[in-house]
Image (tube, rainbow, N blue to C red; front, side, top):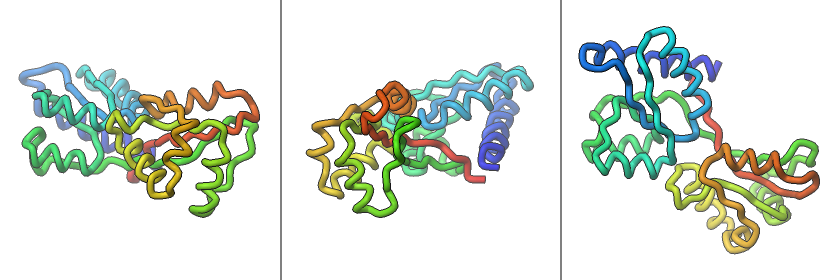
Length: 201
């Protein structure tokens, strides 16, 4: 149901833009957070096939997209975190009042298939699991991604930032984080903190 909800919401947005811009353009330009890349590409390809309108999309961290908007980028559609869209509205980078919530990003812990799942049932258990891992991979907060910034803050609040830095393997995207876990050798005791996207439905 969540995937269907995202599909309907996104397709509706694209259709509305296509209808609004069809007199002047045959292409919809989109800037979107990397967390939604997989579901958005699926919807965009189907929409382009059915509507005959090309969807040109650039994915990146929330921070990278914010920088593009500040530099003067003028996409037809922007998909970012709620806070980032609100900031863009305030700056005049996007049309005020045009915001629509299509989903939410979630953060979790993942380990390689065949590796015992860590106990993260409590805050203390989560902290112990991260400290016990030989390697910890996550998206680099320097990129400005919402999930990455949150994870960095979480590690700081738990008082384990310095300990994790010694074994941290940061990546630019959540996809790269997952790929790193899949490449890890069995029993490497590695943990990753990727983000995933869920529609609001």
